[in-house]
Structures are given as C-alpha cells and as structure tokens.
Image (cartoon, rainbow over the protein chains, first blue to last red):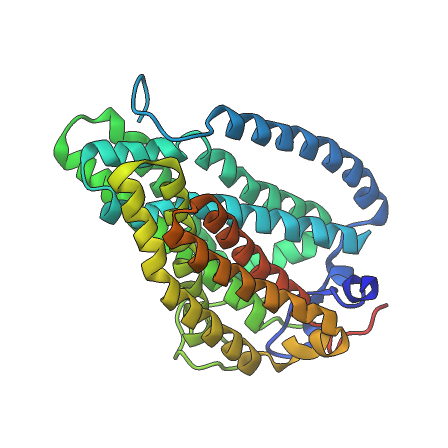
Length: 72
Length: 291
C-alpha cells in the first residue's frame, strides 16, 4: 500500500497534451532540496498556528446562528 | 522531499475546496433558500466568521506551490492567466457582495449585493471545477515547459485545448453540484426552522444530479485520459477511493432526509476530498521514469 503512494506514482503534476515528454513532474519543477527541508520546518510551525486558529474560531461560533447584536 | 511537498500542496488544496466549498455553496443557494432579509442575514452570519479564513487556504496552496515547485507555479500561472484573472475578480466581487450588503441600507443596493454574491459564488464553483478538469486533461506545454490557453475553443479535445471545452465544463458542473449540496447542508446545520428545512431539501434535490454527473465525469475522465487507470491497475487498493466516494454519496442521501445534517455534511466533505484524492492518485505516471 505504501508503495502505491510513493514518489514514482505521484510524480506527474501537469500533463502535456502536446508531447508526454514535456509534462511537468514534481522532479523537474521542484525547488532546491535544502530550501525544501528548511521550508518544511517553517511550514510545520505555520500550520500549527493556522490549525489552532481554525479550532478556536469554529468552536467560538459553533451552534445555530443567532441574529442578535452587531453583524451582517 | 518532493513527494512530501506534493502531498502538502495537495492536502492544502483539498482543505481549501472542502472549507471554502461550503461558503461558496452557501452563496449558490443563497437567493433561493433565504427569501426574507432576516433569512439572508442569517445565512451571511453563518459563513461570516469563517469564509475569509477558509479562503486563506487558497493563498496557502498558492504560496506552498510557489515555494516548493516554482517552475510549476510559473508555468501554470502564466498559462492559465485569463481564467486566473477571472477567478481573482470573482473572489473580490464575492467578498464585496458579502461585506458591503449591510453597509448600504437601501433595497436596490441590497439586491445588487445579493445578486453579486450569488453570481460570483456560482461562477467560482464552476471555474474551480474547470481548473481541475484542465489539469487532468493536460495542457499544451512546449519544450520550455510553458503554455498559453485561450478561454474558448471549438469544444473538441484537440492538441491545443482551451480553458473551456466539453470535458472541463463537465468538471465545472460536477463542482457546482457538489458545492451546492455541501453548502446547503452547512446552511441546514447552522440555521433553524423553515430556512434549515429548505436548505436541506436543496441538498436532497441536487443529489441525483450530482450522482449522475459524478458517474458521467468518471467515464469522461477515462475517455480523456486513459492513463488515469494505470495506477489503479497496478495498485488495486486505490480502487478503495471510488468505493469511498460512492459510500460518501450514499451516506449523504441516507442522512439528509433524516435531518442528520452533520453526518450528511461530513459525507459531502468526504465526497469532495475523495474525488480530489482519486484524481491525484490516478494522475498517473504511465510514461514517466524517475530520474
């Protein structure tokens, strides 16, 4: 199952209708490997922040909508 | 590392479609289920605190795409220049429709902003589906990895396709129906009484169309890109994805009439996610050799 999700299978990102050789894959379009590694660390941090915001905001506004007070 | 970033970008796009999908969907049914000013304000309040946060996932997807796959970003953003400009305008007009309505207390302007919100939401749903259709169908890339697509073509699939042809418009209609159901179920959860019941009946009404279009689009995808089945042949476990998609559809139509809106809403979200994961999985590497 893991092999099914491996790099070899998920490589294509934009197929070419002209010539299959021109298709864009994750390898011929990716940024440098050092950048990708550093970016992953920052991405993790940012995503934790974003997810906590989402948990917070959806909890705050959970339940049925009320029309009292200021708003739309 | 490339695979990891591919998964990150794919998950971000999926999160965007599922999250912003319900507020776009709410916009597509807005004029029909919310009839009085009170009801319209209720729908706007239901999506009010979250719609712009949901849209940030689109920025995040664009940002990570730009960061991790700069050449893909460059190529697709220049090739899809015309539709992207349209989508940007639609996103802005939709926001104006939502936010300005309460600030001009005249009926004419209220109706204008209501209409703007509806039209921009519906066209966005269609355009996002069309975008996915384009990416699955393929684009006329040249040897340098660039392309440019006109908006219209003869509707036939040719070597130099345009943004809109029968296949991509079909994908747009699938997206429209999926988001109508998804948004209607969200409105049903967040509201009460007649408004909630009307929203629920919209989801039930659109279901047969969604079911039919889903099947048509899967057959059409096989016709347009036969290689889409390659990964499924080699990894039959992948066939669990379509099973999952139809399972979600079945759950949706089972739960909605029983007023189990939350379950039905979760099912419509999973249906959308399943369709996207299925497309990503089947995307195929039939003629690709890893370096």
